[in-house]
Length: 199
Image (cartoon, rainbow, N blue to C red; front, side):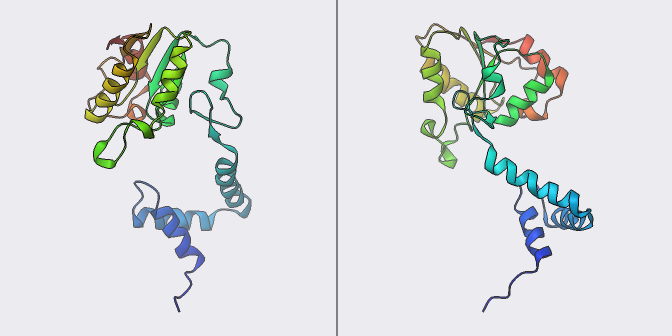
């Protein structure tokens, strides 16, 4: 009969399963939680529960939201004619923190990666095409990661959008090749938005 793991071992294993967290970091985090006041630890656990139970993809753009539509899509002050296509919600958050983009977004929920079995059907490309066929959006900014997979994803989307009445641009290449948007600083992202180029 297998021995049941202790609560601290289970917590260390849970942290070790997170991306970029090794065994030593997992141990430090687990012991940090152990030393937290009870109220703080319970609030930490509650925040995880709330995220899992209350957040869902926005029905329009796939940003995370507590309701069917996210705050960005519902905001009438946003420019309804410009749409930035990003791979993940964290890319959207990075651009929002830069504070220079006032249009809408579309989160692909990944990028094309044939070697990993990620084809167009696993991304929200069809929903993007449907949004654009409504005729409100006039410019699509490709905000995919500037690497082989990100560029391949942008090219595949541009091919699908051929014939639609939209201008396709891409973020300026001041972004480091291969770096993700979340790693760029505010000024770099603001400049990339302002200096976007034809795709």
